[in-house]
Length: 206
Ligand SMILES: Cc1cc2nc3c(=O)[nH]c(=O)nc-3n(C[C@H](O)[C@H](O)[C@H](O)COP(=O)(O)OP(=O)(O)OC[C@H]3O[C@@H](n4cnc5c(N)ncnc54)[C@H](O)[C@@H]3O)c2cc1C
Image (tube, rainbow, N blue to C red; front, top):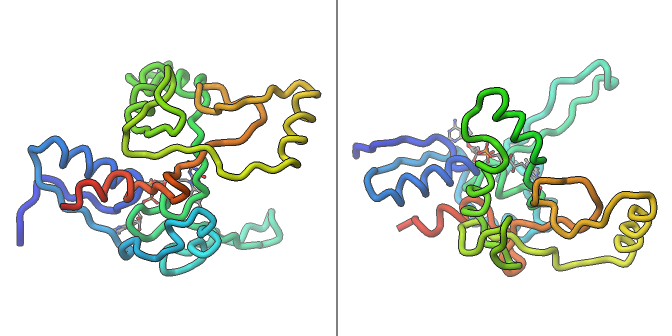
């Protein structure tokens, strides 16, 4: 048995980021353990592939909620990723940060370092933003963020209608204010999913 400084259980979003950061410190040996298989199943990497990876025991734990009598005893499928990248390998790819005030309330509750202004540098550090670097965005980070490749007339019409009733048009949901209507960005690079495994594990696999 080899010896390690850290053992990380689960190669999901958190596990991949932690492993990358600890390994890149250059000081420690890390063992990362994942219950699922590797992420070679092609549908993981094709964005619309979540239709194939959700509810599929190859990549999903296939949990179900307990039947709830307030919902006519229906048991609802509750997907969670079971593969390298964890849920970031089967999720909907939406890249939307939280609302500024939510972080600030966490800080006001006593959580040092969690205000919007304090977490923003970490969002920026993580990001490889297709639109380039700016006050709110980073370029060159492990997590690719891109505009959606498809727009639809019906969605543009919907956005115009929302704007007519006072819901502003938004072209960036990641500046701390989520109110508005527009296209969200996605965690993709060149049309392929950028899971936490792709962004944070692949570069350090050696
Ligand atoms: C279907 C779906 C759609 C989503 N859509 C979006 C979205 O569009 N945008 C967004 O921002 N977020 C979305 N999310 C949420 C986001 O993907 C998750 O919040 C995030 O990936 C969770 O990261 P995590 O590290 O907490 O857990 P996970 O990424 O789930 O990682 C947990 C890992 O631990 C492994 N594991 C569990 N138990 C063990 C064990 N005993 N031994 C070894 N390994 C174990 C699992 O197999 C898994 O790989 C979605 C999630 C799902 C499931």
